[in-house]
Image 1 (cartoon, rainbow, N blue to C red):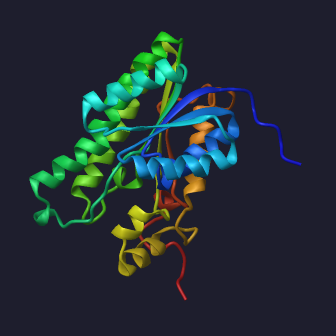
Image 2 (tube, rainbow, N blue to C red):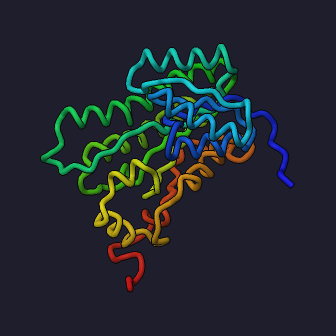
Length: 263
């Protein structure tokens, strides 16, 4: 017998919600009792994602075309959500891009593009959603960072800088917004199976990751989603803020040698 859906937790916005980690998080949240607004770049992708979510729990998901790198697009999308869907209580900043490019081959244009989406976009959406939460007495924000924002990885000058910025931004936000009853945390995933990562990681790259991840595999998006559900829910994490939760199979804990002897 299917367990009853939890009480209505309010509206959560998930950027990058049409695919990958964002879609997995949106699916998990509706199963927990949230209404969810998924935001992404294209209407066809959003419609396909919403159909998947509606199959889990119909009538509690809406979608909006939003470019997180464009302030006006963010403001318009969140305003429409607030007036037409309900008060915003949660936010997951999952929109992001990544490129593996050697340092000297990284153009200024690419560096700026990645920071604009991954870092400035996270800031802009969080600022606007935070203003809405402040008006309603609080809420919770989860930013998707990366272990590449905690440690240097070859080829990730732009991506690593953007995610390192997300880590520090999360901690600053947590301190400033705590008096407003807004909790802010981040998830730092290790390698995970999504189309974006599959496009970035060659066979050689995958083999290298598996050498340094003690669990010796990539995460599934649903494993990242479970962490987001926990961090958004005041019933489960009411005294957790400013935390960077590694979901990395032990990557951050390993030493200089491979995780364990390889066959």
